Length: 103
Image 1 (tube, helix red, strand yellow):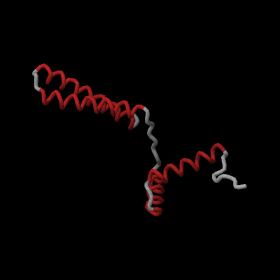
Image 2 (cartoon, rainbow, N blue to C red; image 1 turned 180 degrees about the horizontal axis):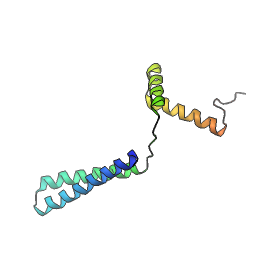
Image 3 (cartoon, rainbow, N blue to C red; image 1 turned 30 degrees about the vertical axis):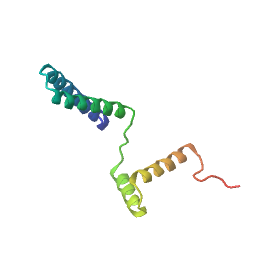
Image 4 (cartoon, rainbow, N blue to C red; image 1 turned 30 degrees about the horizontal axis):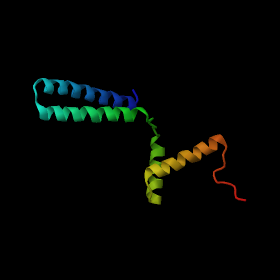
């Protein structure tokens, strides 16, 4: 299983346990537990829906190290360096120039 699938499975198990707890708390008329389990259920479902649309990208260790060093040297977030690296790679794949032509 890929990490994203594991995360979804864990979230699904958490939501299932929260629903069972919610039903149990509702039958016992324990209102504070109903509120807690309802909140866990809603947040878990929201996380499941949010994770569904996002794909994960696994980097080799040397590339992750390079991105971290580049970010530390430039004083910018790792995500921004990774975005630029992916954009440059993609530009090379499709043959688009990296810098716009000036007239």
